[in-house]
Each structure stands twice: as C-alpha cells, then as structure tokens.
Length: 300
Image (cartoon, rainbow, N blue to C red; front, side, top):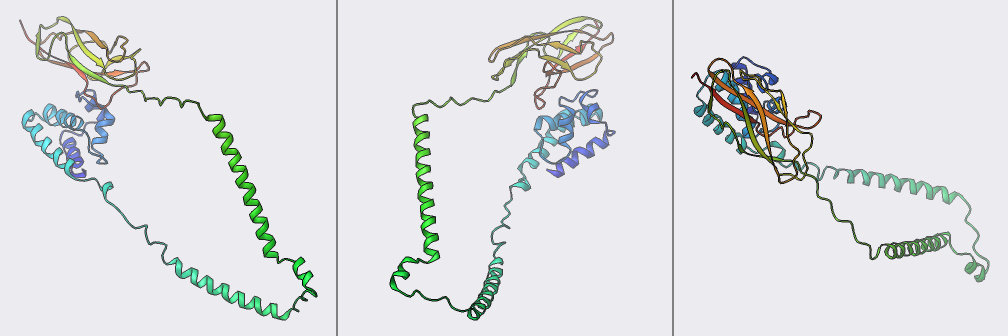
C-alpha cells in the first residue's frame, strides 16, 4: 500500500507537482481534492476510480502518455497493492501473561502479613487474657462478635433480595402488554447515472454554437432530494453556468438535469465535469464519478 502511494507521489513530482486543488479543478480530475490527497498518503488503498483519476490527469493529460497502456500498467500495480494484507490485520498477543509475575509479589506480601501476624501475636501475649464466663448461662448469653456480624450480614442480604424481587415484579407489571417501538432504518442517500438524453459523449458541435446538454439520474436512496444542484468543478473552453438546479426527486424516481452550453469559437475538444451539492453548496458523494459533457468542436 505504501509503495503504491510512493509511486503516485513520484508521478505527481514528474508532472510538475501540481496541487490537489489544481488536479481536481483546472486539470479535470473526476475526484475531490481530499480524495486525491488521501490516495497519496498511503494510510489506506484508494478506490480504483480515485487512483485512475489521479494517474489520468498527470500521466495522460499532462505528460501525454498512452491512455490504454497507462491504465493497464497502473491497474496491475493497484491490484498488487490490494492483494497485500493491511498491517492492522496482524494479531498481537502480548497482553496474556503480562501480569503473571505479580503472583510472586503477592507471595511476598503474604509473607509480610505473616510477619505482622507474628508481631501482633507477640503483642497479644503481653496483654492479660480476658476473664472467661463464670457460668454456662453467661457463656450462652454472650455470643462471639463474628457471629453477630454474620447475622447482620445475612439480614441485609435478605432485605436486599426482597427489595429486588419487588422492583422486578413492579417492572414486569407495568411493561407487560406494551409493544416495543419498531426499529428505525437509517436513511440512505445515493444516486445512479441513467444516461445522456442529449449530446452523448463524442458528439460534434459547431464553433460558437449554443446547445443544451441533458443528463438523467436516479435517486436510489431513501432520502428525498430538495434544493440540490450540479456544480461545475473544472475549467475549459466551453462556457456554462457554475451551477444548475436538480428538480426535487423522491426515492426511486429519476430527474432530468439540463445545462445551456456555448462552444468555443475555435475547433477542439470540450469536457466539463459536474458534482452534486446540497442546498448549502456542500459536495455530496465525493467517491462517485462526476457526470460530464464531452463533445468535439468541429469546423463546418
């Protein structure tokens, strides 16, 4: 895993060491800057989608390497890193037996206690012995202190048991017959790309022309969408609004999202990436691939 992250960092340095924000925005990586930064830290293996976007914008788009050969090479490196077990999976059995030497200390303490007992016995021998009961009746009337303590302890335990039984009966009487509330299923928020409604990838447009791109996505979660938008995350020759609204969409329903685009005046390629945000502009689904527009501007 660490070796894979090192290769990503070396590739980044070879491509001029751009910032992660530049890779995500200006260079057009289809991943957030936090996902790109996490991929190169080596703490955990990134998803293949995030790893490929990291490699693609540097090796293919910036260094001009062959896309298919580059993807095949890095996919093999990623699979090797995935096959290596994480260090967190190894067992460490160092706790058992750590306290075993304490038994020796207990023995020492017992010996000390024995010595103290011997001293106490010696001191006791110096004191006059208590006078024994003069009659058998006095001996019966004067129980030993340990016997009195035992009777008090037993009485306290019986009283505690009676109180516990009473509380248990009260609880059962007040809760019997009441239905338990149904368990709540946690809300799930998720989306799925359905397809391009207009201008599929590779479509041709005229220089300086205006056209409307439409995508269709589906709400596959359990949360209704309201106030959400698609936000543009890169720059390029084609002009468009920075954000476009997503219609309110209930779980299981689809939404058609449209954006008005103006092609540049000169021939070339035009690709724009978009990510979903909430009403406050916070990016959602950072690990998902963005939806995008990919057209060729061709001279008439």
